[in-house]
Image 1 (cartoon, rainbow, N blue to C red):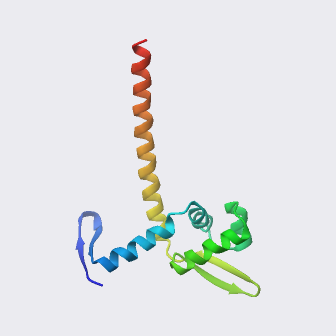
Image 2: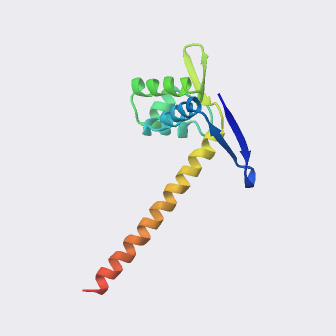
Image 3: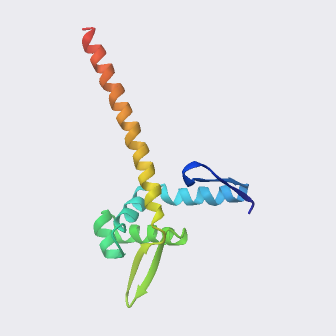
Amino acid sequence: MYYRLILLSKDILMMQLDDQAFIQLAKYFQALAEPMRLKILNGLRDGEKNVTALVEISGGTQANVSKHLTLLTASRLIKREARGTKAYYTIADQRIYDLCNLVCGQIASQMSQEAAANEALIFSLQATQ
Protein backbone atom coordinates (compact mmCIF):
# COMPACT_ATOMS: atom_id res chain seq x y z
CA MET A 1 0.00 0.00 0.00
CA TYR A 2 1.40 3.38 -1.00
CA TYR A 3 0.75 6.41 1.14
CA ARG A 4 2.47 9.63 2.00
CA LEU A 5 1.88 11.36 5.32
CA ILE A 6 1.65 15.11 5.36
CA LEU A 7 1.68 16.82 8.75
CA LEU A 8 -0.68 19.77 8.83
CA SER A 9 -1.35 22.37 11.53
CA LYS A 10 -2.72 21.09 14.86
CA ASP A 11 -0.96 17.73 14.35
CA ILE A 12 -3.54 16.55 11.82
CA LEU A 13 -2.26 13.82 9.51
CA MET A 14 -3.52 13.78 5.95
CA MET A 15 -2.90 10.69 3.85
CA GLN A 16 -2.56 10.45 0.12
CA LEU A 17 -3.75 6.88 -0.48
CA ASP A 18 -3.72 4.43 -3.36
CA ASP A 19 -6.86 2.66 -4.61
CA GLN A 20 -6.42 -0.34 -2.31
CA ALA A 21 -6.14 1.93 0.71
CA PHE A 22 -9.33 3.77 -0.31
CA ILE A 23 -11.10 0.40 -0.49
CA GLN A 24 -9.98 -0.38 3.07
CA LEU A 25 -11.08 3.06 4.24
CA ALA A 26 -14.50 2.57 2.65
CA LYS A 27 -14.87 -0.81 4.40
CA TYR A 28 -14.07 0.85 7.72
CA PHE A 29 -16.76 3.49 7.23
CA GLN A 30 -19.16 0.86 5.89
CA ALA A 31 -18.86 -0.98 9.20
CA LEU A 32 -19.98 2.22 10.94
CA ALA A 33 -22.83 2.91 8.51
CA GLU A 34 -25.51 0.97 10.39
CA PRO A 35 -27.55 2.37 13.31
CA MET A 36 -27.48 -0.90 15.29
CA ARG A 37 -23.69 -1.09 15.07
CA LEU A 38 -23.44 2.52 16.27
CA LYS A 39 -25.73 1.64 19.21
CA ILE A 40 -23.48 -1.30 20.06
CA LEU A 41 -20.34 0.86 19.91
CA ASN A 42 -22.03 3.45 22.08
CA GLY A 43 -23.06 0.72 24.52
CA LEU A 44 -19.41 -0.30 24.87
CA ARG A 45 -18.34 3.25 25.69
CA ASP A 46 -18.20 2.60 29.42
CA GLY A 47 -16.54 -0.80 29.29
CA GLU A 48 -16.89 -4.41 28.29
CA LYS A 49 -20.28 -6.06 27.86
CA ASN A 50 -21.60 -9.48 26.96
CA VAL A 51 -24.22 -10.13 24.28
CA THR A 52 -27.09 -10.11 26.79
CA ALA A 53 -26.16 -6.61 28.02
CA LEU A 54 -25.74 -5.33 24.47
CA VAL A 55 -29.14 -6.74 23.47
CA GLU A 56 -30.70 -4.87 26.40
CA ILE A 57 -28.87 -1.61 25.59
CA SER A 58 -29.52 -1.70 21.85
CA GLY A 59 -33.08 -3.01 21.85
CA GLY A 60 -32.20 -5.56 19.16
CA THR A 61 -32.69 -9.29 19.14
CA GLN A 62 -29.93 -11.64 20.26
CA ALA A 63 -29.46 -12.94 16.70
CA ASN A 64 -29.29 -9.44 15.21
CA VAL A 65 -26.86 -8.11 17.82
CA SER A 66 -24.66 -11.21 17.40
CA LYS A 67 -24.56 -10.67 13.63
CA HIS A 68 -23.42 -7.07 14.10
CA LEU A 69 -20.87 -8.07 16.75
CA THR A 70 -19.37 -10.54 14.29
CA LEU A 71 -19.01 -7.80 11.65
CA LEU A 72 -17.59 -5.28 14.13
CA THR A 73 -15.08 -7.89 15.33
CA ALA A 74 -14.07 -8.76 11.76
CA SER A 75 -13.64 -5.03 11.08
CA ARG A 76 -11.38 -4.82 14.14
CA LEU A 77 -13.51 -2.12 15.74
CA ILE A 78 -14.17 -4.32 18.77
CA LYS A 79 -12.42 -7.20 20.50
CA ARG A 80 -14.04 -10.43 21.66
CA GLU A 81 -12.92 -12.44 24.67
CA ALA A 82 -14.51 -15.80 25.48
CA ARG A 83 -14.90 -16.64 29.17
CA GLY A 84 -16.56 -19.94 29.88
CA THR A 85 -19.89 -19.98 28.04
CA LYS A 86 -20.02 -16.20 27.49
CA ALA A 87 -18.22 -13.80 25.22
CA TYR A 88 -17.33 -10.27 26.27
CA TYR A 89 -16.77 -7.38 23.90
CA THR A 90 -14.67 -4.23 24.25
CA ILE A 91 -13.69 -1.38 21.98
CA ALA A 92 -10.46 -2.12 20.12
CA ASP A 93 -9.38 1.52 19.88
CA GLN A 94 -10.95 4.30 21.94
CA ARG A 95 -10.21 6.80 19.16
CA ILE A 96 -13.35 5.55 17.41
CA TYR A 97 -15.23 7.79 19.84
CA ASP A 98 -13.20 10.81 18.69
CA LEU A 99 -14.43 10.11 15.18
CA CYS A 100 -18.03 9.61 16.35
CA ASN A 101 -17.90 12.82 18.40
CA LEU A 102 -16.52 14.74 15.42
CA VAL A 103 -19.34 13.51 13.19
CA CYS A 104 -21.99 14.15 15.87
CA GLY A 105 -20.68 17.69 16.29
CA GLN A 106 -20.88 18.26 12.55
CA ILE A 107 -24.45 16.95 12.42
CA ALA A 108 -25.47 19.08 15.41
CA SER A 109 -23.99 22.14 13.69
CA GLN A 110 -25.87 21.40 10.46
CA MET A 111 -29.13 20.86 12.35
CA SER A 112 -28.64 24.12 14.23
CA GLN A 113 -28.07 26.01 10.98
CA GLU A 114 -31.15 24.41 9.41
CA ALA A 115 -33.25 25.29 12.46
CA ALA A 116 -32.06 28.91 12.30
CA ALA A 117 -32.87 29.08 8.57
CA ASN A 118 -36.33 27.62 9.21
CA GLU A 119 -36.96 30.14 12.00
CA ALA A 120 -35.94 32.99 9.71
CA LEU A 121 -38.25 31.68 6.99
CA ILE A 122 -41.19 31.35 9.37
CA PHE A 123 -40.53 34.85 10.75
CA SER A 124 -40.44 36.36 7.25
CA LEU A 125 -43.64 34.53 6.23
CA GLN A 126 -45.41 35.75 9.36
CA ALA A 127 -44.22 39.30 8.70
CA THR A 128 -45.75 39.30 5.22
CA GLN A 129 -49.19 38.20 6.45
